[in-house]
Length: 182
Image 1: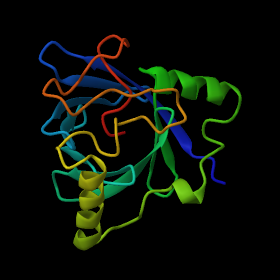
Image 2: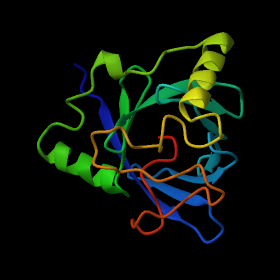
Image 3: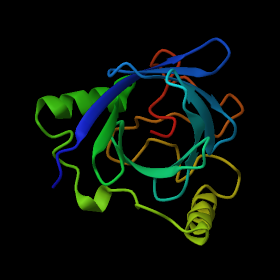
Image 4: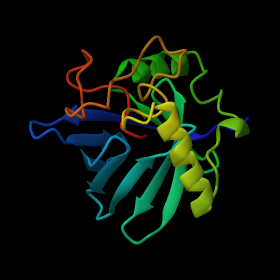
C-alpha cells in the first residue's frame, strides 16, 4: 500500500453555475461544465485545460499545452492522481466529510492500493474503449457515466445527478454535490 500526499479542497457553486475550487495548498480553480463528461478549468497559477470523465471512474486531465495525466475516483470524495502520489479529498460534500471521518481513523489515504491507481498512459484506442464503456453503462442517453457520478455504491449516496441540463445540481450540500471529476 502507498501513503499518498493528501490535498483537501472545497467547492463553491457560483451564481453563473461555475464552480470555484479552493485547495488547502493555496491553489484555486474555476471550473465550468461543457458536457456531462467534460469540465473546462483554469487556475490562479496560469494553468488551464479540461477534465474528461472516462469509463471505470478514470479522469483524463488535459492541460492547454497538450500534457495529459490520469486520475481515478476511488469514492468517499477522493481521487488518486499519478501512481498514487496524490489524493485529492473533497471536503465539500458527504463523500468529503466521510473522507474526513475515515482520515481521522487513519483509513482515508491508508486504503489506497496499486489496484486503485489510474493508468500511467492510455492509447487513443484505449481511451475510446473507456468512453464507449461509459456510454453503454449510462444507457446511451448522454447522462452520467456509470450511474450518478460519485456514487460508488458504498458511500450511502454521496452523489449528484450530472446528466441534467442544470449540470451542477444541488443535493442539499449548499448547491454542490460530490465531485466534478476529481
